[in-house]
Length: 185
Image (tube, rainbow, N blue to C red):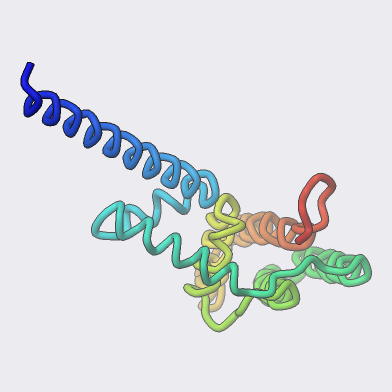
């Protein structure tokens, strides 16, 4: 074998190794995004022109989230929010529309207390998606019913469902950061 052939073979092998390593890194990053964002990963991919654009958006969400001062609540604040939630649930029997509106406001207030910006619903979704992607569908469903409830177009059963959906995100926000075995950094 000539030296030229050996050099070409070595160069091809090196290129193949570099490509394999790069493909592996992309797969690991993709899997990390899928695990972190849960169903929100696929939703974002479907909404974007390409998987690459969606993954870039998700990484930008992570960067924004990392810059936020998200903090766990002190025990006294958690207790107060739990009592507030119990009152909201109690009013559902007599005033279901108002209870759903109050649940929305309470979740937004809790988000703010934890350090999430609350400047708009779409931005709330993006910010919450980083740590609460698996619960975000609950928030979307509840918010949709809340909007329809404002014009009295939601049934009592839909309102009941909205309360269940709000509670899922509420509980996650209330206890996130102070669960046993979880870093509260």
